[in-house]
Image 1 (tube, rainbow, N blue to C red):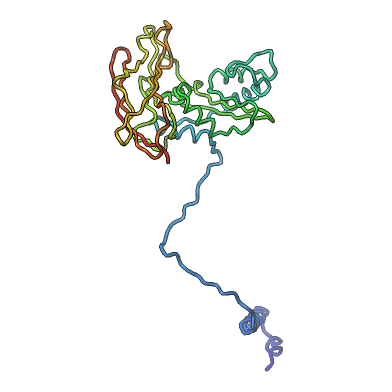
Image 2: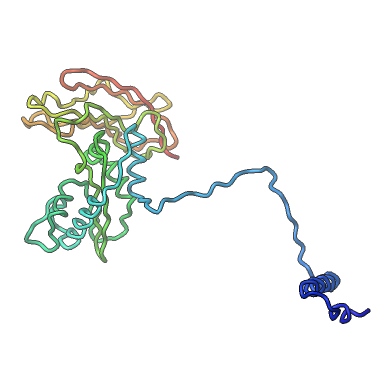
Length: 302
């Protein structure tokens, strides 16, 4: 019986289709097709691959900012849409008036807004005049490397923040809101923060500032007696070879007759630190006539 006879026999359509499929597969299997050499292998060691999960609401500036805060033992902050919008208005104003005060908006100048003016008063600011390569990471890192900007970024009572980076064909401006979410001054926490933090790694091997910052509730008795002072002869930076690193130091001005919000002592190495090296810090301060000492370690990046 021929193949045609088989197909034409009075059977159901389903049976005919099945027979045609079987005959087709038979012919395909015997035809001399060239086939590539394929070798299938199992992994030498079974492992699980985890794909990164990126939230659609991910904000680079917030992640970078919170990395610093968490490293210092502080709560992460959340992004405030109003703060972001206000800073976008303010950085746009600065592009229109690049030589203006970065924290003050003039109602008589182009781009002035009430929200932008408020954002300027509440924020760390950076200007890059004559170039447009400023990035979000550069902004956050630069503020943290500047003691007075760092002081507000590491305030224990910040809960929300906002950020904006705006550039035109010539200049860039960026801002980070660090004051908008603070409570009233008399409700501040009584805490202190060191940075670099204890046992922190990845610190830049440069003349990186080492700070001990004090935060306290303001009262009617808050005067210069509350301002922190460094006891220099009881303070040192020591490398792994037990060599003392020379440093400069800064502290609040105790002669201005008014309360200084930056209750922070700063020691800055006079020479670049060694890469991939552990340092010991011994710092002694006096605040409100109380002597305090901290000893801790941090490690620089390669």
